[in-house]
Image (cartoon, rainbow, N blue to C red; front, top):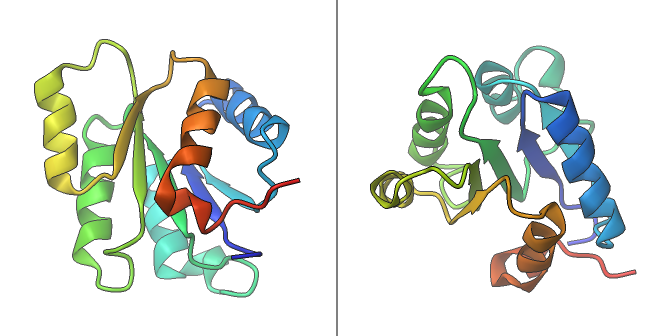
Length: 144
C-alpha cells in the first residue's frame, strides 16, 4: 500500500531518532506516526482529541510498541486493548523489548497477540532488515 502508516509507540527521544533514522536508511518511505505513551496511542487509534482527523492520522498498517512504557504494564494493556477492538484486531503488532526479557515473558506477549518480538539492543538495522523480509510488512514496504 502506497500510503500505509506505521505507528511507533516510544517514550525515549533517543530511541525514536535512532529507529526512524534506521527505517529511512533502510529504504522505508512510508509515513511513521509517533506517539510517546500508551494513552496517546489509544487516542490515536480511536481517533479522538487531536487525532480525530483520519485523513491526517490514518489507522496504521503496522504498530510498533516499546514494552518499557510507563507506568509498568502500560504496553501490555495497550496490546490487549488493540486486540479487543474489531477494527484493529488484525493489525500487526511488533513488541520492542530488551535482551533480558525471559522466554516466558516473550511467550506471554505472543499469547496477547503480538506478531513479533525484538530486543531493542539488537542493531536497529537488523530489525529493519527483518521487517523488510516479513510477509506482513511487504504490504507496506515501498522500495527505493
